[in-house]
Length: 105
Ligand SMILES: [Zn+2]
Image (cartoon, rainbow, N blue to C red; front, side):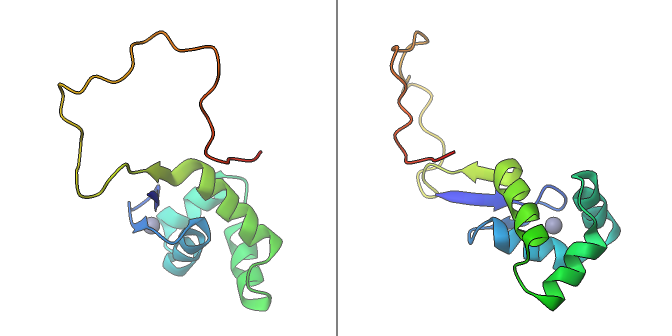
């Protein structure tokens, strides 16, 4: 399961980075504004874009950053952490990559 954690207040969104972007704009307090601005965006511009045309490019840009920076993979919300005895594969990795989860660049 993929979740997105607000880098400022740790609100967890399971809907996606766009939802988290909406959250950050919805909050609109200083800490959220500062975080957005620190990523090279202009909070006020994104906010304006949200009202004029929901899902504007700047809005998606913010979501893309959130996608990268706040995405957390949770293995299983019920099982919790695996038992410490369950040692996974040893450190030496096989030569072939095992990233077959359909991630496209
Ligand atoms: Zn937040």
